[in-house]
Length: 118
Image (cartoon, rainbow, N blue to C red):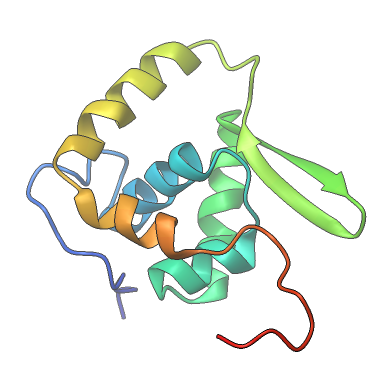
C-alpha cells in the first residue's frame, strides 16, 4: 500500500521519486533543522515511511543527521555538491505548494510555559 501524505497532490511535484520524498525535502528546506517524528506528524506519513526516505537521502549525501542531546536532527548537507541548485529548485517548487508553508508555520518551535492557557 502506498503511503499517503495529508499534503495536497500537485502535478509535477513528485520529481524526487515520489510525492512523499518531495514533501519531505520541501519540509526539510522550510524548517532548516527538524527531526523524523516531526516530519511524520506534519505530513501524516507513517514513521517507517519517513525513516526509509531519510535513510535514502542520507545515503545519497543530501542530508546529514546531527545528534543534539538525545535527538537526531536532520538538515541539508552543507558539503553536498549540488546543494545550491537543489535549494533553488525547492524554492521554485514551494511557489506551487503553499500548503507546505502553512503546515510548517503551524508547528511550534519554542517550549510552552507550564500551566499557560491555550
